[in-house]
Length: 212
Image (cartoon, rainbow, N blue to C red):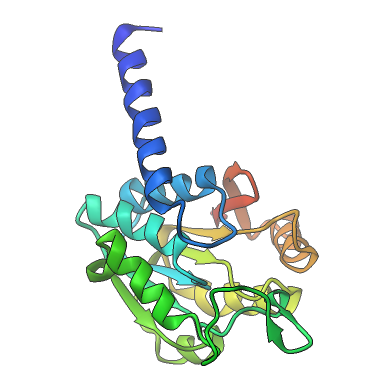
């Protein structure tokens, strides 16, 4: 390996650890290497259009996406979430996280996390569920990150409702593959039908583009 390649590798490693430390305090279920992959896709990914995140929770993945896009001075991240948690976060109707205040919403926590990270100016919040938010959508999307309700039915809806807006060479990223059976089954069926081609796999993150 040349000295130039070694130095570039060292720079990437240093950047990874710096960013990971910055967002470590934001509660979430995204592994740092998965977050850094999203950051690089937001910063350098192909295509023209919006970055849309379905499911934001407290803002960890949003922060990685917004950081990457802001560094490149590209599009703001559109964060779609009702901030009331996904079904897997609930037990007997109660939200299983210490973050949720009595008001029953993570919205203010999400906004505060973005403010602390200096990224609140690079995120447009759509405070609604995926089904409601997509009704008024009419813009190309270059990066679609699906991380909301992980059931088969919800994953199917999130991809099929939003993917018609994917730009040429646009990317669709799915989280928690291999963790939640619903989204895993849907993603595997999508690949099996030949509708998409996988271009990146790290941790439980899978990134695909529409097949030619």
